[in-house]
Image 1 (cartoon, rainbow, N blue to C red):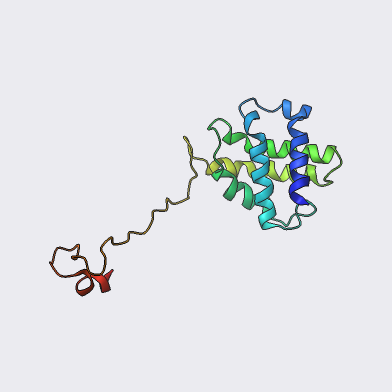
Image 2 (image 1 turned 90 degrees about the vertical axis):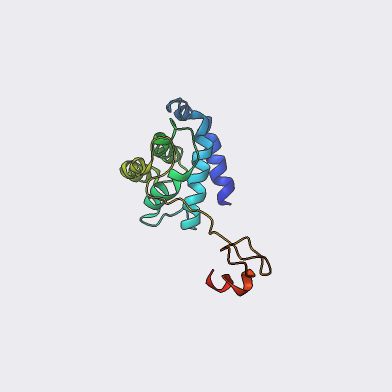
Length: 158
């Protein structure tokens, strides 16, 4: 039920006058932003959009939304797109708390923008590299150069 409701609402918003007033740099990314936001909030708070637990918006906006791949010029505008959408939901009678939620998003917007790196990426998120795995099989010569089989030399140390 949630997915259909949220998708319908975001589709209606994208065609609305309000969406037409958004910054042109973000217009091509509106549906992607709203979809990611809705799914992220819903993954934390199962009652959304009927209810939202305190702190849910802050977690989503500062932890999950900065990781969304968007054009560089659209990234700083994400909180305003979400806030405009939530206000639209209030004005259209779909979510009574929409204006309050929009105000929360605008307060959190500064933290969101502080997480963005120029040129893309997110500050404070370490780059994960795959663990190095020895390519030597048990019966192959040991990569250390000892001349012994890997199983008799360095297998236990790896």
